[in-house]
Image (cartoon, rainbow over all chains, first blue to last red; front, side, top):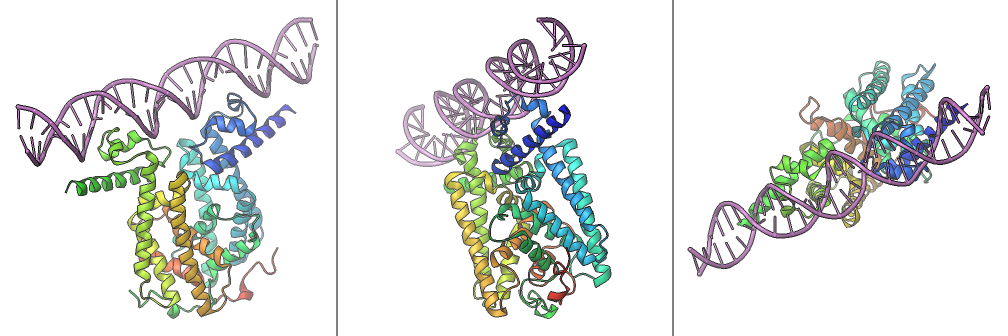
Length: 207
Length: 207
DNA sequence: TTGTCATCTGAACGCTCGTTCGAATGCCTC
DNA sequence: GAGGCATTCGAACGAGCGTTCAGATGACAA
């Protein structure tokens, strides 16, 4: 099948492009850079892709779809809210660690997209955030009112998870399992001894 | 003094440039854009600045210096490790919220710098991270061994704090005080009822 | 008035960019 | 061998980029 061969070559182009985008940034990367990295001639790139923008869109869109699909499968049949939250986090971090270049492009080049491309990715993003906030609502229903604004907490969690493209090395000594545990524990429990009571928290009486 | 007038005009150029960089991104912004935004002619920009790169460097460098100076002053004479951590977080978030454009440029355009400029900012960054990790070491000394790798915890905290440029509105209904409290509590304590015991955490017995 | 110096500018330079186009190549079918 | 189609490419185009330069402007000193 010719169709499959073409798709496969597009995939490898997207993979090569993601690496270069992650390394140099989208705007600093030229189509000539991508030609060199993918082994396709400059003009040849346009047989697989309509524009540089579409290339970025395809990287972001496909990987985001994969994250969302992974999440849906990870949550399937799981009822306990905390377990659902834990799986949401693990899925996000596991995919991130397994596709660092692509996820860095998704996290860092969010504003590089324009027009319809931007809107389509943003719609996925909104749905994904909504999924997390639904889980947080369930958590609150089971465990009582939260100690934080739900929306704020959601974005702080995304901050912990998405910022990892600036420092995390999946091949380093800090494994993804430890990362997932730590993020989950930090979100739900804390850094020092878990039983930190309200009164022990600072800010209450300090200027 | 003529010197002071010049410095003042450079300041206002940097401030205008930070807004445009924050809005469009560094590489997408042209010197012609900056000329328009600052009210200086294209060639006139080069009377105040050697290059577009230096412009970015000055924004990052000066604001980072301000963050660090604020931190040193906030920690002065404070002994309690948890209070020190709380002040470190508050200083970072307060400055971020008060200078969203500049801090977005500092967070998001970290890799846009090159050569000496990059190295100088990175050195500040390393020292700043070291400051946080020193505080974490003090916290551990006082409150016993932590439940997370120290370096990992530090970067997760920076993730929560730096990611806010993607979602936080200082003029919205979520005040900076609440933000600081939440980040501090999430780092130290947690989202649902603080006494979440080890056993209650998922991951242990779930696939 | 003349000269000096900081401040500012219009116009241009050389370069790289994303994209296009006409043509070449390789492969399959008849 | 001929025709058709998917694939690939060298060369070029127009546009925009960061930067430079020779010179204008205006304030102040002599």
